[in-house]
Each structure stands twice: as C-alpha cells, then as structure tokens.
Length: 259
Image (cartoon, rainbow, N blue to C red; front, side, top):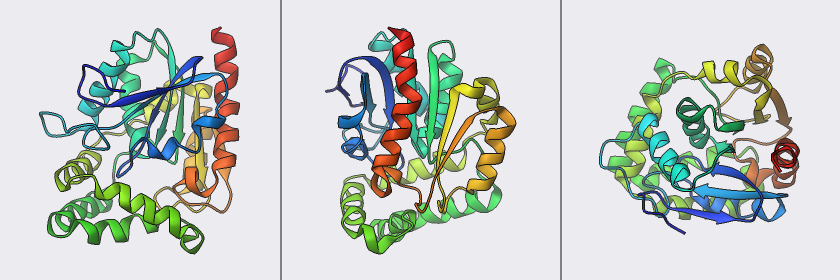
C-alpha cells in the first residue's frame, strides 16, 4: 500500500498501531517472519527513503528529514497514539521521530540499535564505505552483510537473500544513507526522557554495538534491556522466535491499555 506521500508503506493486522522501521540495506521484507505472530496490533511498515519501493527525498538524506518523511505518513494515517519498533537505522529514525511527536508515542523499541552519534573512527569508516559503493556496490554488499551475522555458516540462505534485497537499492541511496548515519546527532536524551517506556533488544555478539555498554546505558535511564544470546545484529533472521516473544511482551500490555 502506498500513500500520497513519497514513502511506501503497508499495513498488516488490526488493533493497536505500531510503526515498524527496517534498517540500512533492508526493506519491509525483514518483518515477514515476525508479523504473522504479533498479537493484537496493527503493524504499519514504512520503507525508508531509497529502500524498497520508497524513492529518495528531493534533498540529501539526513536522519532529521528521514524522520520527518516517516512522520508525514503517520500524520496522514491519523494515528492519535502509537508505538515504534526500529531495527538499526530504523531505530536511529525512531529516536529522531520521537522529538517530533513525543506526545503521541507510547513506547519505542530499539532492535539492534543505539542512541549514540558516530565517533570519529566510525565516521571515517562510513566515508570510506561510501567511496567503495561508488566504485563497486557488490563488493560492499558482499562484505558488509555477512558481517552482521554471528554464525554466518548457519545463515547462508538468509545472507544471500539479504544481499539480493540490498542489490535493488541504488548506489545513490546507499551512499546518502551512509552519510546521513555518519552525520547523525546523539539521541541519548530520548532514552532519558522515555525511561521505562523505551525497550532495547540486543544481540550478544552484535559487531556494531557493544552489548555491555548498551546495557549500562539502559540502566542509567531506567530503560528495559533484553539480551538475546549467541546472535549478532539481525535477530529477525538469527532468533526470530525470541524477537517475536520480546516484541509481544513489550507491546501487548500497551495495546490492552489502549482499548
């Protein structure tokens, strides 16, 4: 389903509205094994600019204008209140969106995501990655995507599928997304403001996020924190049953209270 705004979305189910945002190099395909098992929610799955069926924005991407584009879809759907689930870059977007619509957002779930701005070394890595994409997109995809899985040999089918999906994303969209993430601002203040209404689901061996540091940050701000053992960055593939269980645990009481 698409709207009069530029971003493509689809709606699955009936019940309490929850906005699902995929991550970098992904599309709404990542939710395919998750949504059939979600209870009593209406899932609004929005594809980020340049990903899936969503075009790039007229201006260069930033986390701020990505969040604004997502919020335009939400406003057009007339959602009085909702919660959000964001995977990786989708989590960065959700944190930015909270500052646009804090009065409407009940809960926010960061799935393999975090609130920190990139340190200098990471910024440099993203700049280098953008240059690689410009030179050889497939070289970048074949290196970047398997790296996200803890046990690559056990997920060869899933990795190849993820690479196939990522191939549909243009070089320009990948480069703009990399630079938008490179230049994003720190959003630890959102963890502080949301407190127990912000939930973090983290993989034990996520190469992009140190689980112990993330857990310590959550403890400071009284956020809920769940660690999934023996997985990396893509829990929807590596441990879907546990992700489903944790999402339902976080979201079901909210939906019941909203009725």
